[in-house]
Length: 343
Ligand SMILES: [Zn+2]
Image (tube, rainbow, N blue to C red; front, top):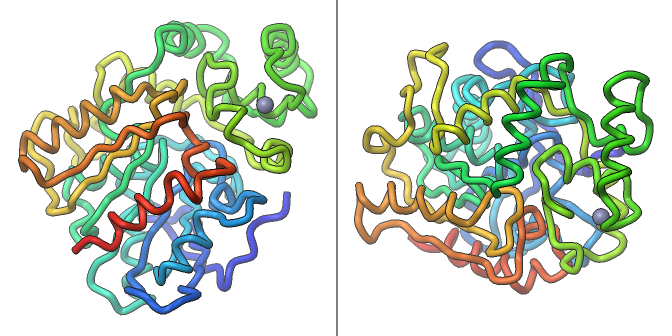
């Protein structure tokens, strides 16, 4: 799997020594030149923001004059497989990433666009007060309150309590080549159940991340090249994450295990320890996390600072198609760029 061709790749280490990197794309037009840190979700990598479309999210930000930094945090499939959790990323990865960008740019603050589990883990760090230099956070799909469709809820409980006990990872690449044992059983099950398209990685990713047909996008929003390209963009996700997310889904809010004293046990039980402004995006047709997820997190932030934050429901969009959809450049990027430009 070839990775995106960045202007420069900056290797750095997380707080616990885990090797991470940032892919830097400087602005391609005059503009604010503010650094924007962009975070991918689970089981993908920084590359997910550069699908084979005419204008990617990275292109749009650069052409608007922003200095773009794509983070490969510990959930990235570009990094060594590891049994990560959101709370480890919140404490070890994201503060180190922000510090690295600020050191490199000489700026005192930055803005962040965060997706899915990049969003949940970054929000953990933000509301715990670990990211004081982040002034604006634009979150897609889910942030502090994971709410999933009923079938996905049942599957999450079943998976983590049954076959999940015997496996260390799920991997959408099993659609292309499944090792013997549980991976072959899961591949057989997914092939028997999913008939929505002919892309085995697309179908496996639907199974890995929920119970939709598909889960992560609306097929009508992807062009054929992007639908094919995702075959190389989804891989290993550890059961440690699924077990952690299952606890959060049951609680209706992100909760921590108590391992890190820096983090609250219940993330909405106190006011957010940050001055950042939050913008929440929710695909109206999201089959992975229901739009209610972002509504609840907006309500929490709005309660503590009425009128300061924003929530947008994106009509006709699902989950990741908000960024990789064939019309995302027209439908979604202008809204995100307008929010990034706001003082
Ligand atoms: Zn598909």
